[in-house]
Amino acid sequence: MVSLPIKMKRILLPIALMLITFSGCQDEESTLPPSRLSEQELETLLFTREEEKLAFDVYNYAFEKHGLPAFQNIASSEQQHINAVLSVMASNGIADPLNGTTDRGIFSNPTLQDLYSLLTARVNQSLQESIKVGLLIEDMDINDLKAGILETSNPQLIQVYSSLKCGSENHLRSFFNQAQIQGVDYSPEFTSQEEYTQIVNSPRTSCQTTN
Figure 1 (spheres, helix red, strand yellow):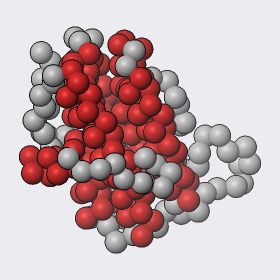
Figure 2 (spheres, rainbow, N blue to C red):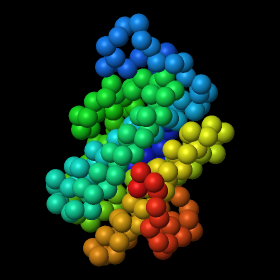
Figure 3 (tube, one colour):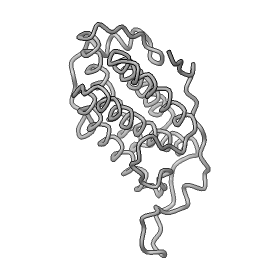
Figure 4 (cartoon, rainbow, N blue to C red):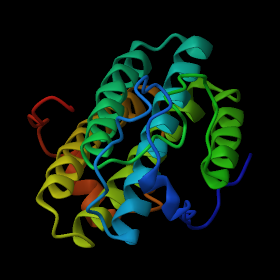
């Protein structure tokens, strides 16, 4: 079995990313407004953009491998998550580190690049292992989004991270249901056992446009 890193570590991207424009901009004199975010807020937002793509890419890979509709459905929701983060980035004058690419398995963050390889290797093992991967990704996302909320007082960031966290909790519930059907056991690696149990045993909730 392929092992995962004990603890995810965010890789700080250059602060200069705040000052460049999106590659798709046609007017050379038209630049995005300067970012109002702190260095830590910027780092978290850029990480979140790629973390959401990680989920999208892995779930689409798992669907193609095993054909379980839950992977395709949740991947569709992950695309909404990506769009929500990109919208916040655009409004803050932050360039996309991936330049809008939708190519599967491509990341600028080396930690997420390595994690994609580890997770897809696990997906290749079996459907049951793929469900564990889904649980792990959502477990990790919830933990990271909680941290993102706590580190900022920016209302826009709090709103988008809260909405994404709500969506990830719904995804966790969906994968937990699949785990029960498939006889899969999963112990949380990022959230506490108490929080994990509370989430999976609570009803699905409405998360505006990101669930």
